[in-house]
Structures are given as C-alpha cells and as structure tokens.
Length: 98
Image (cartoon, rainbow, N blue to C red):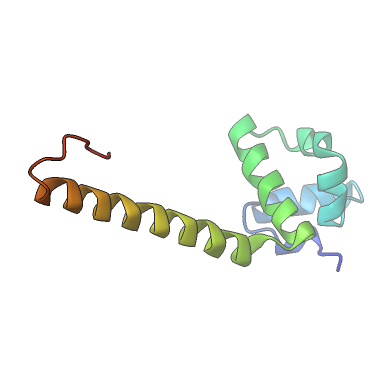
C-alpha cells in the first residue's frame, strides 16, 4: 500500500508543502530516492529520521518490528538478571555476567 508523505510525522507542514510542490507525493519515492530530501535544506540527522519513518511505512515494519526488538531486549535483560542472581548466590562461582 502506497502512503503519501502527509502521513509522515517527522516532516513539518511547510516541508510537506514544499515536497508536494515538487510533485513528491509518496513515501516510496523518498525510499527509492533519498536525495529528494536535499530540497528541504535540513540536517543529516533529520533526513535520516524522515527516511527511517518512510521506510517503516513503505515496508510495514513499524510497530511489529519495534515490538519484536523490545521482546529481544527483555529476554536479554531477563537472562542477565538470572545469571547475576545465580552468580551472587553461588559462593564457589567466580564467573560474573554483566
């Protein structure tokens, strides 16, 4: 599904108007040609965040990918806590997991 650039929350209203005046309408256009953002005269970091949001909308990774990454982090933290707890409880153990 093609999303319009008006869906992008990282763009200001004036930036959206500027792109629309140049007939840049779809997020996939930004994904295919990131240099289209050069017309906005914005910082590299802003360009990257706009491009990232465009890619998330184009490739539908958004919420599901963020949730999956969050789950991986939670599992890693849980394992770290278990190892730390066990290493503190075992008086003979000299291994510490950080």
